[in-house]
Length: 215
Ligand SMILES: Nc1ncnc2c1ncn2[C@@H]1O[C@H](COP(=O)(O)OP(=O)(O)O)[C@@H](O)[C@H]1O
Ligand SMILES: [Mg+2]
Image (cartoon, rainbow, N blue to C red; front, side, top):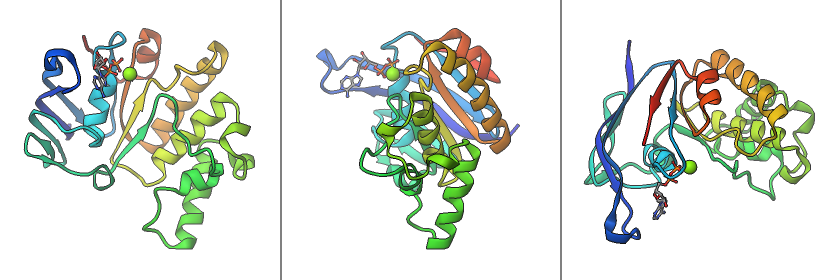
């Protein structure tokens, strides 16, 4: 197996927390190319924080994070999120409310020509089955459709790794069941290396090639 992402002995503490209590302490994890790893842990154990440091939104205090043997984060260096080739789907989806679905998906595609961009947006709309909704705004979509739009936006720039933060927490039980199998199919189809964090045992079991406990 080919290690794609290496997280080695990292620590993170938020200055704002009382006594600088550390959220991640000497934490290590390796992700192989093409696998889906689920991190399972209770609320507050540091799952979102871990994804934020991998994405580059948060600097670390110790250790290293490397992708394909290139160091992205250390105590002295943090590569900016836009240079990491990491896709992020936030817990609340964080779609831009004033942009259509197609514009949301195209947001990270600034380097492409107009034609390439249009083609990639079409391909992503097809992948997540939202072709008829391209011109709608996020508030005109159901929760499940918003989730799929957010997934398409995260995948559009063809990141090396996809990070999913509690992807089903805002959905009702029926929608969740359906979307778990849809997501599994999309991950298999794209073969993208994925790190998913959740507090739900059943979601982790349904999606992970491997499950890691946290907290
Ligand atoms: N920006 C922040 N500033 C200070 N403390 C934070 C910040 N973000 C998260 N925390 C704290 O860090 C801990 C881990 O939070 P988080 O990573 O969101 O956990 P999880 O996603 O597992 O629920 C919690 O105690 C939380 O209150
Ligand atoms: Mg969280």
